Image 1: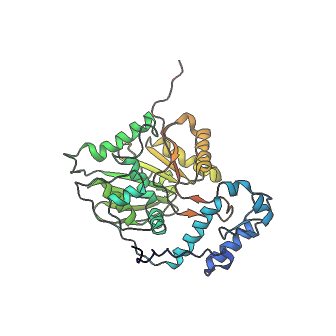
Image 2: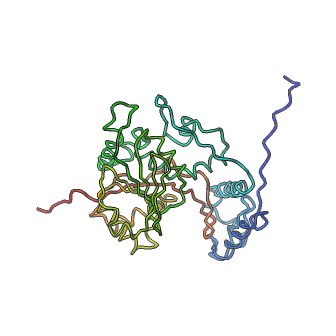
Image 3: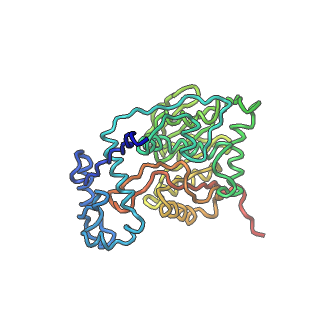
Amino acid sequence: MLAMDAPTKPKEQTVYNWHESPHEDLRTRAAVIRAKASCPVTSKPVNFVCPYSGIPTHATEEAWRNDTNYHSSKRYEILKQANIFEHQLREKKFDFVFPKEQEKEYAVNLSNWDTYFYTRDYPPMDDFVASMYTKLLTYPLTIGSILHQYSPYGKRELTFEGEKSLAALRYTLYGQKKNNAEFNLKEKIRIFVLGEDMIPGVSWKQMGFLFGDNLFDIHIIGDTNSPPVRYDDQINVYRHSYQHLIDGNLFPFDPYFDVFMLNQPGFNFNEVFWKTMVKCLLDSKCAVFVTGYDDKDISREMKWVEDNFNDDMDLLMKPIKNVFSCTKPEINDLNPTEPFHINSRIFGIRGKRYHAIKV
């Protein structure tokens, strides 16, 4: 035993200051931060680079030292990881390998990313590669984990109205099958996604694998209309403009077959548009799930909905942490000391089906 070589330590990843990065786009982002971001301590332009993370964060070294919240929360560790991941993304070559259809006798565990990757037989991966997979899969797996019969969300997260809405959708997904291994439905579940149109078909197919032979139409609602794309016999992807939805061209909606997902909508930043859009979604009486970047963001989104539509909606899911949020930390160039994770929080609402009558 004494003659054995000591285990080799993994190579320490270089932490570059962004303004000295070998990658031009990151040097440009550093310049954008200096030009547009404000110091959280002095409110002056950011000009000091955090020595731990390599990211411009404060106006001066003194302001950096005096930011007790920044240091006590160890925010610099998240920024450092984000910095390393951004460089690895540009330097590390890897191929995504997605598993095929699950054998019927094996169940997928949707408790978290680790159990999902393991029970779906993904290849071994380090934290960086895992974060790349989660960025591709976060939106499909978020809605898939909500709809699934073995969802990680139960009575603690769902309201009574939420359980009723999901029971309707799960009846379509599971109620007509002959046994646990057979799904014989001609009807399609329609998933309407607002706010994210870059999700590849292979990601939606990984969600499809969770539901046997059930058929899905994925409707991406954005700025333009385009012809449908048939990924395979199970998955079709459509793209529509917001106006197409507002004008009623996708009606009628059915709570047993249709569900909506709004990804980090930012209701406060375009209130006129979102008042029209959310009213349209609530009128459908279908489940609507809204995601946010963090607790502050999801609380702001929830408050806006309550302030504008409290009498016209039922709460389906309380604002909670999303089990399938993206694990890759992101840096906000306008506020670099507040890193975030895409799709980190979620809540659910639906148009009120039974209005109270005053007597």
